[in-house]
Amino acid sequence: MIKFGPSGNSQSFYDMGNKHTEQAAKYCKDFGLDCFEYSFGRGVNMSEGKAVCIGEAFKEQGIEISVHAPYFINFANPSDEAAQKSYCYVLDSAKYLRLFGGKRLVFHPAAQGKATREQAVSLCGERMKVLRDYIYLNGYEDMYFCPEVMGKLAQIGTLEEVVQLCKIDKIYLPAVDFGHLNSREQGSLKTVSDYKSRLEYMISELGYDRVKNFHVHFSKIMYGAKGEIKHLTFADTVYGPEFEPLAIALKELKLEPYIVSESDGTQAEDALTMKQIYNMV
Image (tube, rainbow, N blue to C red; front, side):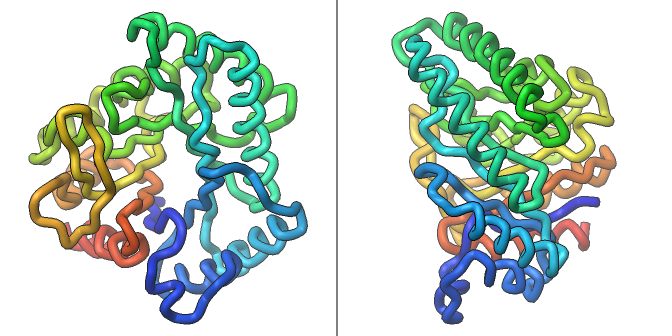
């Protein structure tokens, strides 16, 4: 079933007097939302006991929880030592995802650096094969690990690159950030057909069963010549993309992803707006 929710907490969460992640479970439930993404973007710094408490709170409210691994991950770094740290960032995040009771882990694949695009993508792929082996060795193969479509041109993470990386193993599921895609393609997402062409490409490459419940990040994003600049809110009227054409495309193709709002400070409100739009189209 399609699910909608925020990445982290909106400003309104704090304005209501809330302070703790456990409280985000009821907050999301009261909003009428279905899922929540917890970010370990700056590192995995949490006690196991705290993680269990968070997981229990979300289970009690029936809200599914996913995690975003640290932003430092770079599987195209030429240093093997740096790559080893990237494996650890993913595996540490997976450990806490399990304590949360969740099943989805989103991560940034890589940066191109000084290598050619082809070299960086190839090295990233080889490292993700090693990561796959670590995932199985640690017993995390019942989870989905979701490489993300990235918003800056210097990052590895075009839609095509992410889809090809996901062919490595069934544990990999695309995390398509449509704001990122729109940014790196300079405003390419406008019509239902624009979205459908991307979704149909994914289905043709990975199969309907794998794509049906893929992972989505959505927000309006300011962009420039090099891609993403900053996340905005749905109140912005200058930059896209718009959600309604995607909602129509998802319904027409019978896809039911997890849709996570990454708006700047209005994540829950914009997630609810997306759910309302989806239910109306």
